[in-house]
Length: 132
Image (tube, rainbow, N blue to C red; front, top):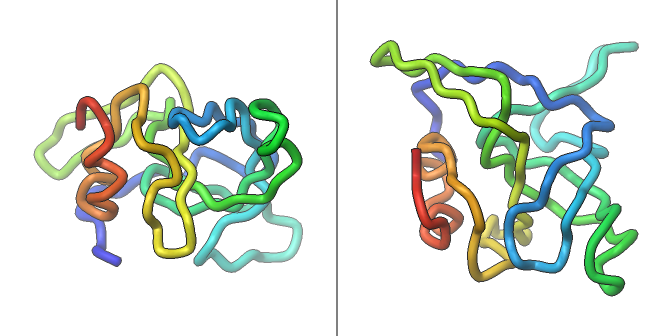
């Protein structure tokens, strides 16, 4: 996995509900874990753009409901500062479901994808209409 040049604030904690922005069948998901992060006693783990999280599907297709899946976070409300000085923030928190090899489960993403996600997961960015 490629390292990111941007320092991304981890603003999506465990328990947060996200919009699933792909056409895999899930609409609303809840974060139940973060891959690659170690916890400290009584501290809630959190994730940011480009992180892989474990989610439970709350709303969507009846076949997808109550399933535990992996997802990559593609947008977050909290602004992040890039190396060139630009600050980027989005109007919602969103994710896209991926499989074990980090390939997208859906065939298209409805909204924009952050450039940091495109650098780390090019297949996810390939099905998005715009990369910001």
